[in-house]
Image 1 (cartoon, one colour):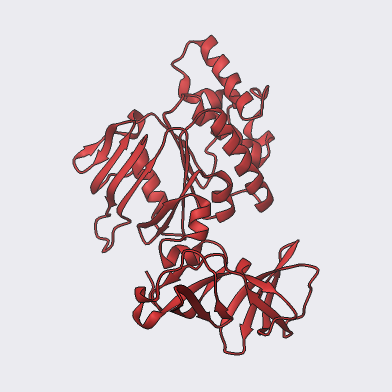
Image 2 (cartoon, rainbow, N blue to C red):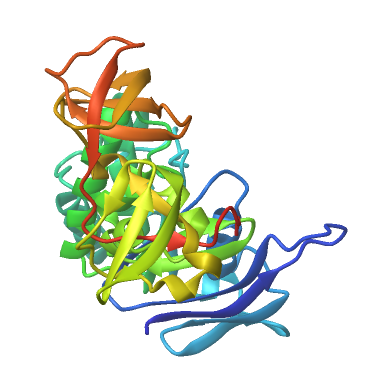
Length: 357
């Protein structure tokens, strides 16, 4: 692994809990890792510890095989060959783009410096703007300039701390795809912090979900969504609810009894013996619930959110159980209506009944 974080702990004096608690993960050279989680979960502190801006209380940070942080070891940030991109861009307003981008490579001979500035501006899709000033650029262009400045010294690792948070939603997702392409073209290894799932899915090769200083899972987006390791990950990623279920085995087949009826022929389902009396909670994603007027199970529409091509319906069964469903937007039902629904679950994700992580 190019970046190896092992049982890293960051504890601030006077605080009862660690900001980063026993976190371990690895990032391969050329990959883009993303840290995601709610505000205050420790993701920015973890990024800063990798950068050398925070000291590790325990554990270890290795970059390219070298221990750069740990108990008794602290290589200063400026010696780690790490580039940083911040959410506020941190461009110098009084100097032009060329001098902003060249700030970290002033020791190079002038001709080499000018060529490198032109090279990275070309890479980020902004050729020939060396003489412009930051205030003459859009937010998205300023963020590209900040990225070009970070890439100019050829860092061995690039760290990005919520770089799109000041941009509007549509631009954020589009820029995330474009920044991913830029980082891949530069063969950069990067670690990215965001609280936005769409950004994380758009840019990351591997994504880490954090909560209260702990890293709950470090995996690709598909695995996080379909095979969450903890109840927190299941709840945080995507739209879904936990419904009470009972597992039973009949003729070597596991059947799952849920508020929407019995699920059969499901893959990767644990045996009933995994839970006391086979009772558990099953994760029902919004895309597991299908609107079907002929279905015997009916549910009342409590809320609906228009998403363009679809609605996200919040539904309540007669039992009181709440479920979510993605429904094509031409199925425009009113709040308070009862509609037919059925479950189409490819594989069952189960957790201990009612236990939070």
